[in-house]
Image (tube, rainbow, N blue to C red; front, side, top):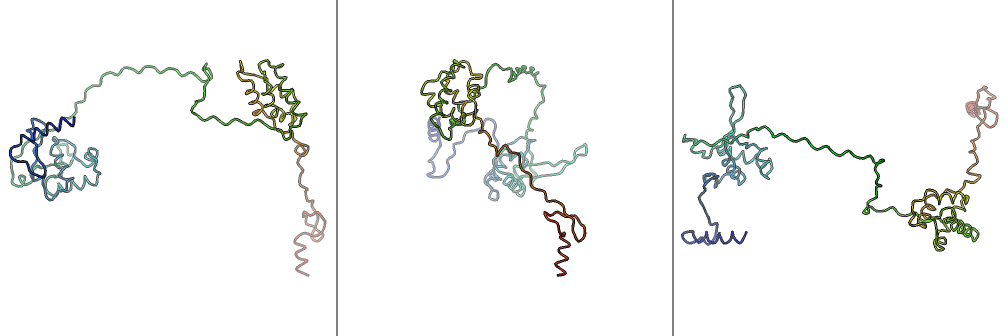
Length: 311
């Protein structure tokens, strides 16, 4: 597309009569057939207006009558802020291009009219005014009937849903709990734990553990035995409500040994009832018969104070 533009521009420059200037802008002008605005050089090249004021003046002059040209409307149209646009409008008012007048309508309502004059000097000389087309107002047409929205599918309660929610593979998995370890893995404790694990397949045929699995999981079962758990209780915790079919028996046993580990049995000190603090008995003061708390009979605090003051 740029190549086509460059070829067309080169062809247009060859059609300009006379030598081209060595520097500065070169105009390639074509006559407008529609959608054009005649702007005087007194505005486009005004010495006292800023570039923002000249640009806003040209923009307002290109709009049809009835268009909104307030600060809010221009701010919504251009990237300049309200401060820049307000200052540009004041410049146009100062040089006679923009006028704000008050008018009263037939119904008594007072409004503010915004008037833009394309030639302020002609306005002072009383020149003829050229009518400008009014911007067409939007016609309100009845909206086409909107078809009713399709009924949304009724959500299925989670409890009755036949599928199981699977956690996302992207979400990080919580760390696996380590296999519990006994404080001291004695040979007798190791032997009892290994026998308990090897005997699981008698009570749950699905839990067939290899020798390596038994050797690896024996410290976890030993920790249960060390904490006073009965072998029947350990066997029940490891074999009850197994998933069907269990794909990895060793992982199931390892998980239950780590998650369901019971706390150590409390000792006699923990089970002993809490001792109550001794209560200091009441005594009767030998000087004023006042009751006061003290482990030994004698005088109350006030009587002792009077004794020391008298001494």
